Length: 181
Ligand code: PRP
Image (cartoon, rainbow, N blue to C red; front, side, top):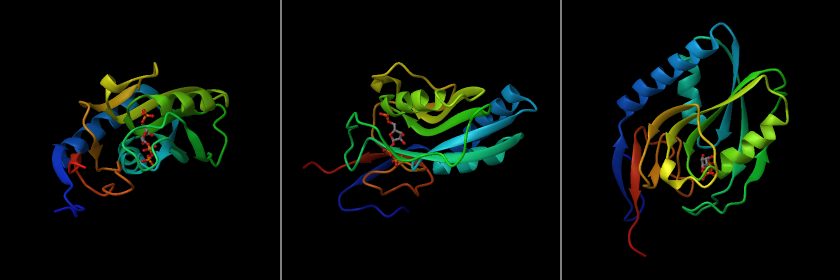
């Protein structure tokens, strides 16, 4: 059982087995779409690190990976609307088939910023894979090319997603229920 802090409660939304099955399906789709080409996965730290680790091992192509770190949430549950670049890529993406790997697409503010920044660097192609998608929360007009699961507007943690940096290690995606203030 996961270690839960205080009166916080967790309710499983997507079980680990379902995640594993879906990650394999998404990887198969990517393998088919790019056929014998190389794909360059860019993980958006920190949330995407677990999804990317599982996804890349299921892709049957020539792959490379890099990471970028942005933050818009801080310690709160709500996006501040301001995106900060905390860590840039290590290498150029010019001429590469880039797939941005996100754990969750929520308001779209982060992805909108990232796509703008990455497009300017002349990748050959630029697509997005998001494990989770909350379409009801969208503010910016962006979408992912590969989506693991569409989910309702609950605050979720686990499989890379955090609340105040905790719960990233949960194997299932869980709804976090906070005690009343
Ligand atoms: C989360 C998540 C996405 C972004 C999605 O990152 O990993 O990058 O928010 O939300 P949006 O669509 O509303 O912009 P966060 O800033 O919480 O950082 P983290 O990945 O380090 O947890």
